[in-house]
Length: 198
Image (cartoon, rainbow, N blue to C red; front, side):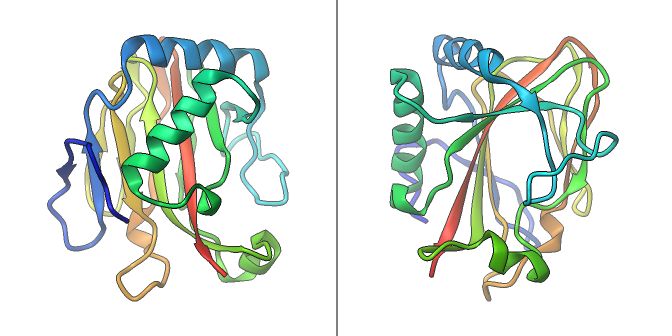
């Protein structure tokens, strides 16, 4: 990773590598992406074969693929900031949480038993997660990294990015995080995952 042109604040911990960046996206960029997301929503899934678990992840999701200038600009901005080849990135994903909806504590890396079926000829384990809050939430909707006591409130345009792996390349369970329930209003976010080359 080679973060560029982004004002970062690192979380002070030797247990995970995590940064935040305020105003990564402008308000008008956020609003345009929310409009696109709301037109494409489907129930979110949790397992990497695409099945759903209604009580574990209750949001709705969409894949941000296609020709919209806003989506292309988003991908270019994230990949450019990370300094990672776009060929090592998954398509950006939008998630939309309404009242009481949440994503219970989970990790983003692939467990050993699911790594092979989720790999491609060119892409392997997930490395970095890059998430952006698209709106301020009236109440709730924080991202809580439960093992390290970090709770990040949703703020429009703020990016949160973390390395899912330890320095030795093995999965880091301290990246376990909870998209807490929305208590008032709604929450919209963008998530983009990067992969290790095979």
